[in-house]
Length: 476
Image 1: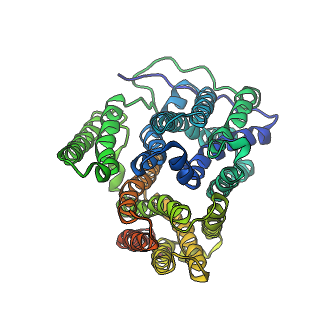
Image 2: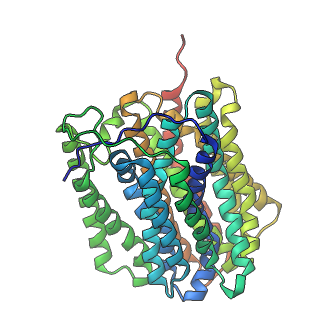
């Protein structure tokens, strides 16, 4: 099934561009917040709902699964049916999902509505950058993109801190529920004001299969990608508690086969002149394979760190939710500063930043492995790790250097999807490692897990060096 009409952006309209930017960035912030805020609440959710370790992994991972697999489809829905329309639909769905998560009576219901949240975020978030690109020009666009970057940098800091504050406050005895319910008033307000502040797209072009720039929905690719992801991830999450029965291995094998079928189908769709979910032809561009390898390693370690360290702080060290949130702050602040300010460094060394960032990340996690009970070394390790992560975000720019402009959207989609699946893999794999070592709870579990996290980050070092070579400035 394909959809063969596109929505043209209406001409830019003078009026209130900055209130429009504010409501767009509020949606971005809300979607980003839910990637981080839940980590601090995980131990309290487990205690309140009697959730197993595997269920807690799915509370985090369910959102990422839906978000990662539907993100590109969400972007194309905006191009086909109108970015403002899909943004409002995404905000409304995200708000409803947040409300239902906050009211969930058991772990299974919470997991189901986390999938709803992730799917809605995948519809909402892609429209934000698209609207900025079509509604802002010149210096206004540069300012808008700087504000967008600042929101991305601040999201992790705010999410981890706000999660600790809300859970620790235990508002009216609601415990962890406000980490979801906090989205509801914001979402309702956005749903009401977006139609007033964001101009509608122009009417769609007449249907034409040969329309230049046409981007159709790849529903066949989506039908392969989602089950392939679930077949691999669910056994990784559930296998430890089930004792690794035969079905877990059979499921993972089936998922890998289905993933291979997905790759073949994507290449055939591209060869026919169609619009695959992930256009793998961009891998021919110098820097893209090494960039993806580095990004995957970095995000696997990052996703695993967030999940396991939150459990360690509260379940092993006995920190309060607020204390755990504050413990994350040095890392999150260093991450935000590094990701925002790396462009201010001399341009001649920019290509060296990805390997430098990976090295800092490895050193940070290695230092954490020997200081998991607290103290100055642990705080220094968190700052080092966060700075490494922040500087490493430069790899997104370097991976795109040699991608033809006509393929930039495909390459960006592949990088974004890799980022989300990397985090998901980290939660699944390192969550299982930590939960196995922490039964019964003991500090050594985080120490051993941190060494594995350091190894995962180190695995991306070779890719980072190759990326540095590909992105190295050429003599004039």
